[in-house]
Image (cartoon, rainbow, N blue to C red; front, top):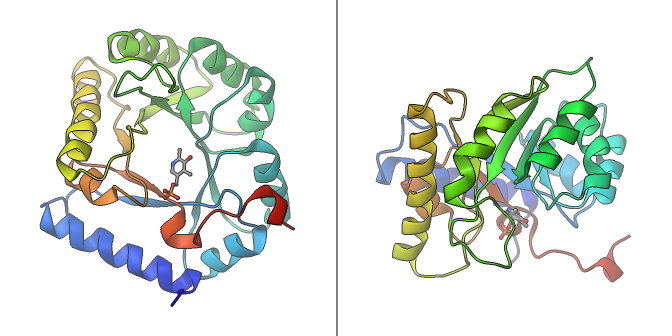
Length: 235
Ligand SMILES: *Cc1c(COP(=O)(O)O)cnc(C)c1O
């Protein structure tokens, strides 16, 4: 049986509370970001009507269409996909959070293009936690340098770290990866990056491990909206 979006949301919320309890993480608020990529504005609206305000998108063009369609609603938009330089202006103008900054050039452009009428853009640095060549993300050994550079940009607010570890069903390995991100975050805070507090980690397949390791934001798509819709089947 497939559940509706409101039922799925309720289930995910209950699991978040359960895991916070199980792993003694009740002191760490966990924000649920509903990843609506490939799903249409109606799906986002249905989730909003069930109390969801934070949404994550990967693909700029489809995101901009949804943001425009739903601009009357008080939604908070998170950009979580890879960023090409020619996309930074629209991201800086339309999003509240960006989770996927992994190089200075992109950060500089977002800073320069963030409209003065808006508050500084919240930035998470994407870390390539498993040091995979194919993955985006800054490596752990250059993270602090990038953090310093981003911290110096006045139109950005360095707000935390994000990672997409190598997919695995081994929960011990999931926790190990998330733990590395947490250690990196703790080091930055100790080094004086006091606003760098968020840990964006955990997706449908591994958010239990992420909460166990102190996630403050989890990014859930499939468990809320169902399987992603292939481009050819979208309206
Ligand atoms: C698609 C995506 C998600 C959501 O993944 P699910 O497995 O569907 O929950 C989370 N984070 C990023 C960066 C994504 O691209």
